[in-house]
Amino acid sequence: MSSEKTLGVLFIIGSIIVMALYIVWGLIAPILNPEINLMSGGNLETPIGSIPVPPLYWLLFLPILAVIIIGGAILSWIGWALIQTPSPEEINIEEIEKQLEELEKEEEEEKKEETEEKTSE
Image 1 (cartoon, one colour):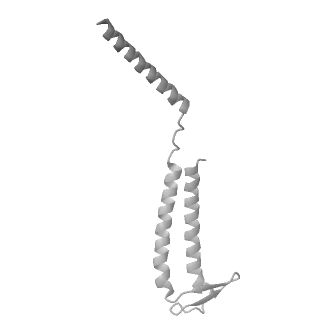
Image 2 (cartoon, one colour; image 1 turned 180 degrees about the vertical axis):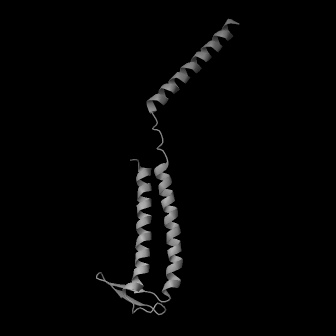
Image 3 (cartoon, helix red, strand yellow; image 1 turned 90 degrees about the horizontal axis):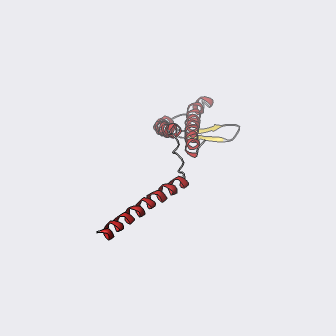
């Protein structure tokens, strides 16, 4: 798989992971700890540690969620385009060199013909 296709897959997977983690954190945080007053804030205790839940939670969460979803959709779209785009053909340097040599030979022959015509006149 080419580097563009690998990058496309990484874009898609990364954007899906970021979107999913933010949604899970944002929607489950208030449900797991009903003691949190969503208008004044608090802390959510987890086995990993304490997660702060900001005041006016939903007013912060929803616009950020929209930005993350839109950004994730755009990155996924870019990743999909990278995956679908065909790889460019490899350039064969030897073939190009042969073509250049042939062109140079043709130019030399034309110059010889021109000089022969001039001398014969």
